Length: 431
Image 1: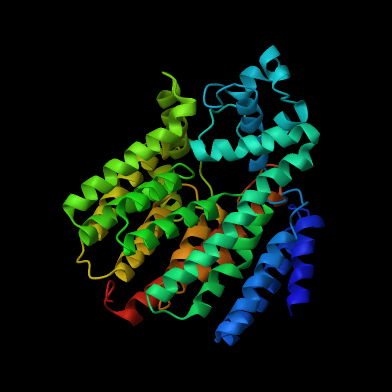
Image 2: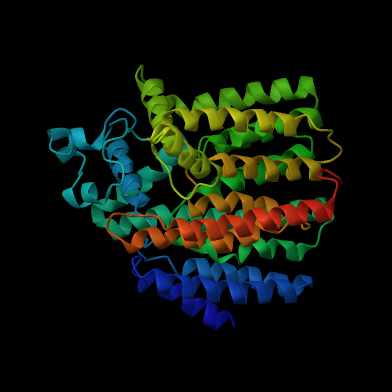
């Protein structure tokens, strides 16, 4: 069975054309069938250990593969090239510098530029991401593949330690060690991180280590890890209020202060008077412009077209963000009894964020899958990871037109299953 799964990942990495939606669904569908079989039939520690090494082997298959399902790596290499040549990647829009002497001196080629999916926007990736991109930028002087490998190696290393620390947390929480297989063997996690070079897994590594240190009462060290997570992806900012009821006001204040200072430290190599403006403008554009595979927002957008005749994302995006914040704050102040409850709150807080978001890319599921490992009574995140591959139907046409019927199918199943599990488990935040 492992050999068949390995063959599937070889097809993903080296033979799949992303416009071939039928092949993509067959590959993902087959991988998930074997995944469910392995997870449901594995219980003892020795089998789990063996399958974890197998899962790392699956990840290593992609080592020299060019990402197929995402073109974000072009921007990673672009920003990395700028940084290693002494330029601040936050200060320049690609379309404004591609034909300049600065662009030439940084090795910014037409091939790289044509691959960008956001040539008219400032970079929105936080500082630690930029430092990781610099590895790709440096090694890309030996060719694009060398740059891609340099971007991939840190992800593979991070995955090894993410799995290791998930197991440590499972042990501390007295949960079965085999639960880690829900993350380690998940086809979406393997393809999106090791294959498509997304850094959500590295962010979750920092979060898992931070929780581990918090449970061992090492507040300062945990705060530094939390800052590193934010400096990879901004999502961990959502989880900060959830810690307050568990660790208390005084410790929380110190935790937030240390996190803030550590986060500021990661920005030092990029500090500039225009930095905040450029980053916030890019984030604002994200919420007001980008839309993909959304759920609640698409219903609101449809109602907007019916009532006013145009796309209301300019107002709906920010309003949904405010509602998301209010709901998460409501979740955070629900009675806290244990670290297991904190992890459950994080799972539902991130679920709220995704259901309210205007953009839900497949790799956003990685964090949800990792958190669900600790909450075995809820499996909707696993189902979502299987169904979200339907969103890749967008690549079937050159206009990148979404298939709204498939999106409806995705969310009807997900929301239906979520409600079923909520009803079945009755108390939302029980220990």
